[in-house]
Amino acid sequence: MLTIAALTLKETLRRRAPFMTLLVALLLIVPAFIPITGRLKLLPPAEANLIVSSLYTFLATDIVKFFVSTLAIALSAGAISAELERGVLSSILPKPISRFSVYAGKWLGLFGFCVINLLVWCAVIWAVATYRSPDTSHRALWDAVPYLLFYPAIFVSVGLTYSTFAGFGLASGLSIITAGVGWSVGIFYSLNSAFDVQLLGTLSKVSGYLFPLGRMSRWV
Image 1 (cartoon, rainbow, N blue to C red):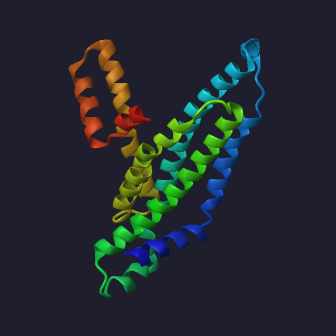
Image 2: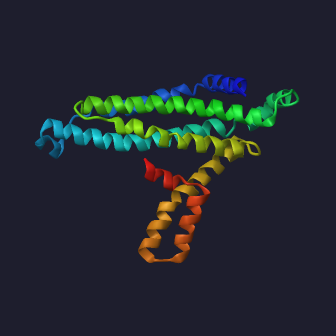
Image 3: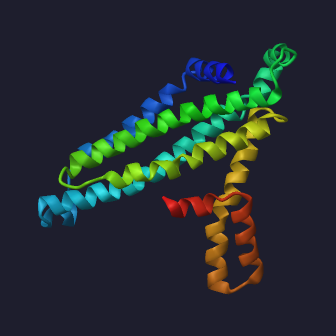
């Protein structure tokens, strides 16, 4: 299982996935060089920088959640089907290796790569926030990391599941639709609060249980 995880990680590196790591890191670094403008200039510099760093951390965390989820889908959606087409799994499975070991190894390799990306991006956010507001502790960002790990864990699992019977395009589409079902919890809840329609409340609960992205977004 660990051997398959290592091979999966090497395959991910061969597909030049680290370029996404670099591009997102550069995107997160840009706010470090944005000057303070507008009404913030009327505030003391320390207070203005605190507001900027807090807003940056809040928005950047959502950016990381989006990109780590996208990365997990992109890597896992074709992980099984692509190797079935190339005949790689056909040559492995007859050997004394269980299907569970193959799938678990794939999952560990892809999840491990996503975790590395997540930690790199969080380190960039912490560095930029500390640069903008050095007198403030940004430990809350690292406290949120265990909750952020749920995103790659869930999306790698979903992508691999769909990849067992669908090609990359269909598996990616199904993963995105599944994510949409999870994110619709907040929409159904808001509509139910506004119009008091029992069906909307039921849809909100069902969506939350099917794919708990809406609940997870309230954790971080």
